[in-house]
Amino acid sequence: MGQDEQPRKWGVLEPIDRITEVIFGLLMAMTFIGSLSVATAGREDARLMLIAAFGCNLAWGLADAVIYLLRTWTERTRSRTLLARMQASEGSQGRSLIAAALPARISLALDEDGLEVLRQRMLRDAARPIPARLGLDDFKAALATFLLVVLATFPVVIPFLLIDTTATAIRVSHLVALAMLYLAGWLLARYSGGRTQLTGVVLAAVGAALILAIIALGG
Image 1 (cartoon, rainbow, N blue to C red):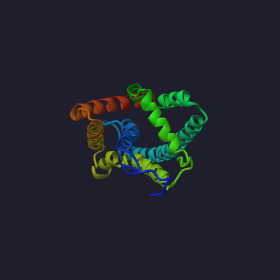
Image 2: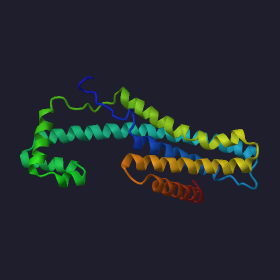
Image 3: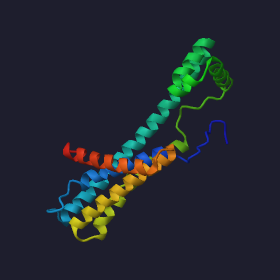
Image 4: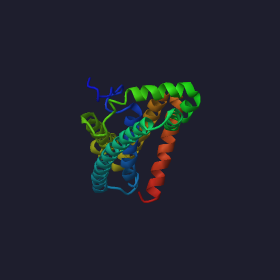
């Protein structure tokens, strides 16, 4: 491994990133499906909906990928700026910079000695800072972000491809969406150490409410 490469414990994206991208793509697709009427929608309405949902998630997947790259570049540039400010500062000021950059709970848990150890180690590694430029792994992660948003469309549109009756396809699609939201909540809770079943049910309920709100607001 080169000095500029950083190990990725979870692959190109961490679990929370993968799961939330799927949730985002699912919610976007369901706003289109939710606009169909069980009583009056026909096959042509369903076909137009499928095209619109897929096109929307293609566009948002691309936008999300670009935002991921922008966020990654910004975070690295901020880290380089922090390191440069630390090199130009005295001990107490450097410790204050580190404390401000750390999550609040971790910052409160560290005393002056702990912050000084971090400061010394960061200064020791200052000769090989993380480059701000984007690398191959970053573009792989951006591609994964794009694909997750787009692929999240398919589970909820497959019923329309397999079931001839539009009303039945809509109901099955809704059930698939709720199942996916439950699974996403279950996985998030497992990753964070929370209550899996409760989180799954809550996310399914919140997701359904969000879909209704987006549709009501014209999304």
